[in-house]
Length: 308
Image (cartoon, rainbow, N blue to C red):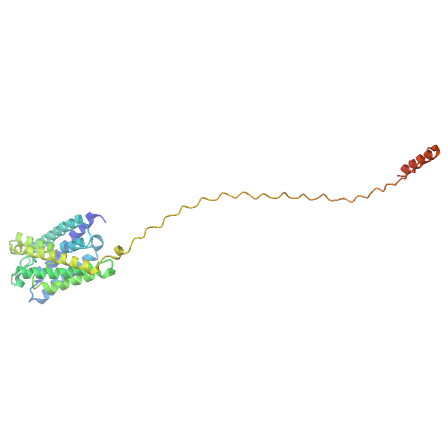
């Protein structure tokens, strides 16, 4: 998500918070003696948080409160540059919300039941700044530590975080409206106080520092406390295993030379049976020098060959 969209979401969210929360207080009043207006104002602030959490929460985290942004920054959720940008966007949103209320109530000639555009004050604590500061520190601590807990990745609360945060803001308003008007949000206090001063009532500016310092101190304590309670993340405690070295694939073995084959024995030539030629054995007797016997012998030899 681009950083400009995050700032735009924070601007819109804070504008809606001041418009509907402070606007409800201006319409119905939030005096502790007026129970209906008291509860309606508390519900208005809480329900705005629920609605914004499920609409812009996926864009910017729906801080819409410098105290919440401080806690998120301290716990490593945003960078220092984002923290400054968030605060500027939130304050501008609060001015825009107060400007819209001014236009509606002045142009419509609607009576402002708070007399100061829903600004915070110290009347409920006898105008004692220390008492007011203590109330704001405690209420902000409760609110912010709840936010850190339900949005923690280790807790895995799922989609119920926005509802829990909204109900917690309603709770701290129910307790704190009768004391300080319940700020727990510097931007929410700055916008209406400036609008009230522009419209002729500068009294809220005198005690504005209480509603800026108190929430920031409470958020700081909440962030430190939560980090101590939660401890190091599991990812940091688990040693990082070095990846096993990648083994290079072995070079394919050269094909083995074929084993020398023994020369095939040539089949022995078939033996053909040959009928043996019977040779007539001629016995030649020892011949003396007798010519007659030699002549007879030659005749017998010739006769033998003729018969063959």
